[in-house]
Image 1 (tube, one colour):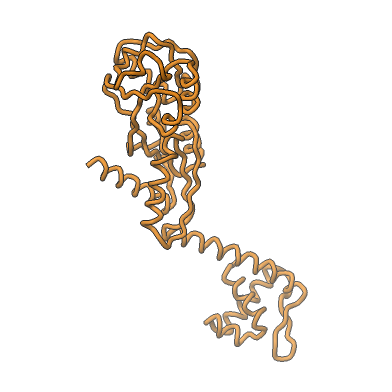
Image 2 (spheres, one colour):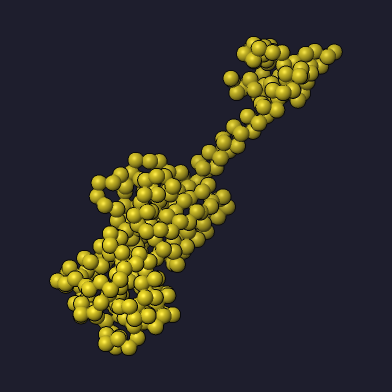
Length: 296
């Protein structure tokens, strides 16, 4: 079915006159007549009939007109949507760790919107653990993810964009609470509330303890840093967690880590083998540029 012929058909149905319809379409009248004849031959039914000097729809033409209008409207909507995308507008789907949701991601997205004022840009925000975020990224549910580094061998591209401070938290009144900072080796005698086995954060913390030649006694595990902080406040153990605003509201002492040296980086991760929308690509480049400016 020739879409251009559909447009000719709709215009003739509206104007009801071959000459005027051809003029409005900027084509010769014989070309219009030829197109309608081919359309009728393809459908196998007459679409128009002459009534005096005018041309009117047959009952088949009336039925086909509604279908044609819907088809052209859908096509025009799709074309306009793609044009908006080409202008850098549209939806950007972000996945990120909850730890980045109170400051880094909202601030970055807000700056991007201000830099692109006047464009119709919308965000979808999704939070989860690194493993689930990477699965969602590979399944194309997200345009990009901000999380820990993916394991080697996955079709993903990861670039560091920000980092996070880790601290030791202990219940107030704990023997370590009076310290201004701690060597992780000092924490080994006490049971600890740890991140769940297999999580990206657990690997980071285990690596720090390996650097001081020890392994903590695990009192209990959880995958959420806020839950871990709550358990520490209630005396279930001590913990290594990211520094977050919640800690100021709990009955815990927050101690910077003096040793070993550490760096927890967060990465902007995108699929290596898939195209992303111009809007998402612009946001990715914006985030990378902000990271470069901060590191300089």
